[in-house]
Image (cartoon, rainbow, N blue to C red; front, side, top):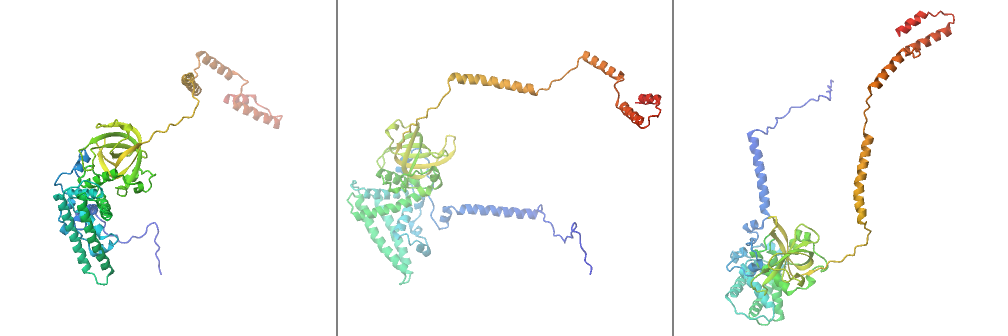
Length: 495
């Protein structure tokens, strides 16, 4: 059998397929279509994360938009324009409430029916109605407030919330009717329905008595406090970061935060009252700290006072402090406070430059946008507080160290340049190569000496020395050998 072995340097190649031609028109069209499809996928991914897209599909709620930028946010927030509607409450609540499936409901068993009712109802109220509900809760929880008449806005608010409650109960009854008689979930929902009906009767009675200035019982106060706690969480969830201070949807949270500051909630709201919150924590985790008590430190770089008209909370001005954080120089803190220490009494309506180290304990509101001195947009943490605490600088005693006298410093400054110049000159002289030029007299003397050397018979050349050694060696071998003197002379001449 014959086996052909092919050299490794020239391996046999099989049949090659057609080469792809990327310059042809069909190939270009396919590549462009693939690139366009990739761009569309990226755009779809970006849009899919926006809550308003899910709301458009009926799977979520539409977040409220940004409000106009104002120079005095407190004046705008405390007195919103009449008739301004919250985008969240622009739809009819009959078809907007409780659109979750049964499976989603079962996954939320840990959230009570009453809490879900208040969360959804509050989101579907208009901005004016949200403000009115906050006033009702504030006046009811504040004992001894002056009585008021039942105005039409309050009646409309109660009627609208009651319609929400009826819709919620109808949906819950429909869900209960679909469950079997032995279902444990049916028993739980039935208990929640009964508890909600009892809760609503207590709330309605407490709200009416509170708005009329009647003293409330402990059970009524507990009911209003429960509603207040539930709405606080929903109110702060509606706040949006990276927006201006003045934003219509932030109005309820803005007023509620000032109310909490005036009441002076206990330090138990802070996880660790002795620990300071860093600047990077607020920038990176605004949702975690929103509505919570925080404490910061830094240096005030500027402040000014803003006058506002009298509002329902009872104050007519506040101060805006720009504080440089103690741990970074990326962006400042923006602190709104009601009062200032007596040492900062010079702060007025005009911006005042300061340099005071302070500590501030307040409630973190959001990351606000502002315009820098370089006309660029930036963000910084916005904190609302009652006042700030000045921190006196610690006097440090510097250790006594020896200082050289003035004459020694002057002598050193004069002598050192001279020494440096001398060293430089010495180094230059050591590395310089000198050029030697022979004079005419020396050159003439050198020619004469070379001439004497050529005529001196005692000086023999190398050839003559070799010939002399050769003749001496022959004379030692044959003493009777005749040496021709002429031959020596001829060799000498030849040499």
